[in-house]
Image 1 (cartoon, rainbow, N blue to C red):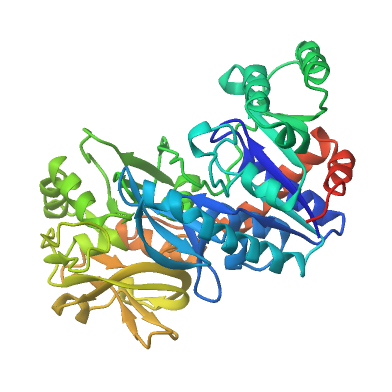
Image 2 (image 1 turned 90 degrees about the horizontal axis):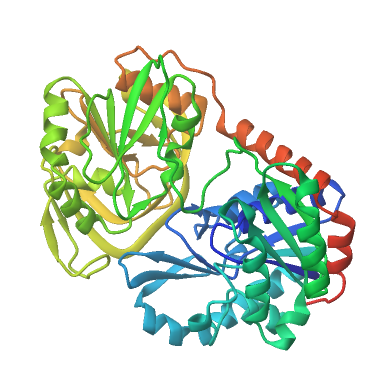
Length: 493
């Protein structure tokens, strides 16, 4: 198998998008291509068919490459739960929580997991397109690196570096990054891609000529700024989608450790929905539905919610006829108590919940990771939908006698999930992906709007496929794909 790595001068330079675009463009040519990211740090994750957990970006890239999800696509996933610590997930399974210094020492072990996954993929595919993390020029992270040049040197693969021109300083970013690499690492760099260019390319040409002459490395393409490209985000939250005449207004509480905010991509893209994220110091304001989202640190985020005064606003919202939906961690917050005796997420041990529904949650070290099919029981109907679960909690209590979901089947043997309050104003569920299908979207929003939402027919899967095709078209037009293919064949892993 040939291996080609995409590294960036900064975070958000466009690595994830370029890998996705290359995977689809190369797949069109009949090449069996697979995406790979040795180490990812993100709170947006996806569940694989075998019950593992990988970064959301790698799931999107797998869709672009038209390959099945596998934990080998992202062998090391870090999910931050504080400013200095993260849950370490190896081959899809949570290993432990580690502080940054402890994980730095663990990276020697983590590299073996990375190489094992890469080797397995090499036995199945023709070409592996690897995404780096952050920048390879972070001097303080160079020792024991597994995410960028440490991996590239280990497998001896060519590297393309991408930089974002929209932020300014693109030539300084590229030349500076290159200069901070060792001689051998510089030899692995085979070319540059410039991302998010706006304007007349002729005005950039003199700079491109200088860059090639100064570095001796080719510019493999200049990608234009795609203003309305809408693909699953790995980290950044698109704050709002304000509509002039919506059928329903939805507010999502923007928690410090919000996880899987891709749950709300469909709401953001639906022309009949006004979506707003409620940020620090803001009030919830007018909304039909308030969503408390998932969280990687439920106890600390609940304390944040209270400090913002959102707890009293939620109660006022319900008193005046508004609906509240809790998803995963947000569901847990709606209950009486959340206990964390094993310090799965924090050292607080236990915290009082919002007490808006009669149940309790205990966090455990056993993490539920599964894709499920179920029927949503809102509106007195059974609306079939699919989704996935990622949680460490066991929730029990009287409120669960009116469940939100009934499973077709569940690996743990559970028959139902979540709750619907007796007054029909509150609901909670562990299921992510509720809005991803037109059926699920219409079911939940019809409940939330008391029937005003008529359904838009928006289909996220179809939209995502259209966006991937559009991205591949852009890569075919603005990149030298033939030269990139030739570069990928210069070394084999």
